[in-house]
Amino acid sequence: MNLAEGVQLVTLIILSVMMIGAALGVVLFENIVYSAFTLGAVFISIAGLYILLNADFVSAAQILIYVGAVNVLILFAIMLVNKREAFKPLPRRWIRKVSTAFVALALFTLLATMVLQTNWAVDLSLSPPASSVETIGIHFFTDYLLPFELASILLLMALVGAVVLARRETIIGEETAIVGEEPAPVLELPERPKEPIA
Amino acid sequence: MNPGIDLEQRFVETLVELGLTPGVAKTIWLPIPMLLMIIGATVGVLVSVWLERKISAAAQQRIGPEYIGPLGILAPVADGIKLVFKEDVVPANTDPLLFTLGPIMVVIPVFFSYLIVPFGQNILITDLGIGIFFWIALSSIAPIGLLMAGYSSNNKYSLLGGLRAAAQSISYEIPLALAVLAVVMMSNSLSTIDIVNQQSGYGILGWNVIRQPIGFLLFWIAALAECERMPFDLPEAEEELVAGYQTEYAGMKFALFYLGSYVNLVLSSILVAVLYFGGWDLPIPATMIADWINVDPNNAIFELVTAGLGLVMTLLKAYFFLFLAILLRWTVPRVRIDQLLDFGWKFLLPVGLVNLLITAGLKLALPFAFGG
Image (cartoon, rainbow over all chains, first blue to last red; front, side, top):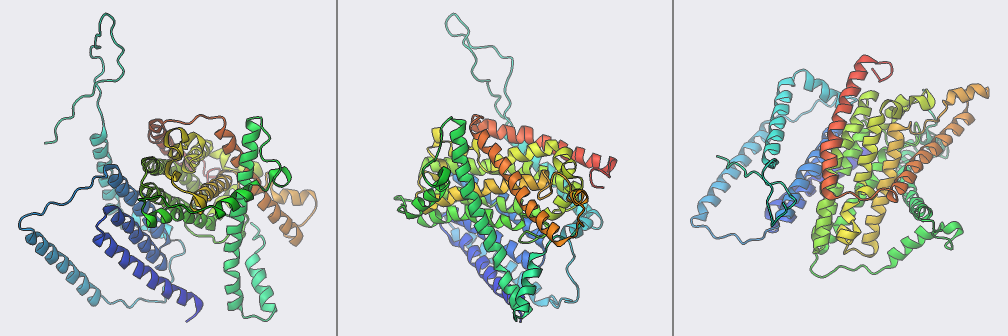
């Protein structure tokens, strides 16, 4: 084993431990802010694993999108709301717990069978592509064109939806309020009430 | 393109001649550029703090630091030493773990970004294939540290400052990335080395600022906002928020925030120079100078001189932009938070998209000038 392989092995172990530990933290912390921060640690360790697999572009994209956007937005939402309330004990809570355990166990079995049945022997003679960005781009515009375009449409729909939800409509041209003799200056435009979402 | 001087190869060869195996020689080489870069970045911060004090003083017709060393040049060192020896106060009811982690999360990504900063053809730590994208990805980690600091301080001003910092950072990252994308499209590569090489050869006429004037303005504005410099320093607006997320910090933890913000400013200035002002490229092409003084461009001494000049050029350009940033601090008033977000989303973002579209069109129409 030379230096590079040793470094790779140690990094793999550190990253895996970090990822599993942080993932457990996400689930087990009582404080939701801690869960959100440990989620960031999970994303960063996944990015590290991508680097070990020679996928440098994917790993940078992982950090940019998941850590820089998704996780920051989650934290943002938690901190803006910042509401603490104790959960009320629900009647028949055990039904939820049992069904959750069942679903989690089923997923685990599925993934475990997949891991055990797949042939992991990799052809080591293949060298990684010189530029992963170019390879990904070529695939996007040839054999994965349809999923790529569908994903763009999905993002566009999300964008339009966000604008519709956040837009405030003001009523322009309404009568100004009259206080005493002089018309009082209008300091803000009246807002049109939002239509209830059916 | 001449390959320039390869320091790594020379260093390894020298050690091998001294009787070490090539593997050991390479292992000894590995940490040296990183250490050099960290020291360089820290010294760059000291210089920029001194410049900030002196230029601010000049802008207000004062003298500024004068007695600490010649021209007050040791003032930032004194600042640093003072901060190191200060008591590390952790206020009551804070979250001590997050309170400590916050500044660390802000500083580390900034120093990491120096991996891709080039000072010459081979004078950089590593020429990553994803180059400039690496910097964009890393700079998106900092808001998490800011949120952490704001949340854990148990102080309303800190929390507001942290939230503002995160909102600002997310909003201005998009125009920044769009401006960089236009440059990347012209150079057909994300690597910082390729971006500079694509601009070199014609001296000052080949620099990207001539082909990408809108992109340059976009990038500069967004970079100032990312560094929380004056027109956009809302997260720590002292009239509104005391000091934003830094309010409760003292001693070395505060020093980390301070260091991080200046390292980030120097880094952004260097990247403006690299992306739009030809990096280490001289205003007059090196081959032309070689012609004038009748020297072979591949002469070892000439190469050494141009490499040194390139390093100086990069720093000169970077410090020119640092100077501009400091001048802006004393000339432009601070914007309001709603104006800031409006400006980012409703003005810079559409302009960035149009700039990208125009660049793509010009690239198809005039492939010789816009990198076919």
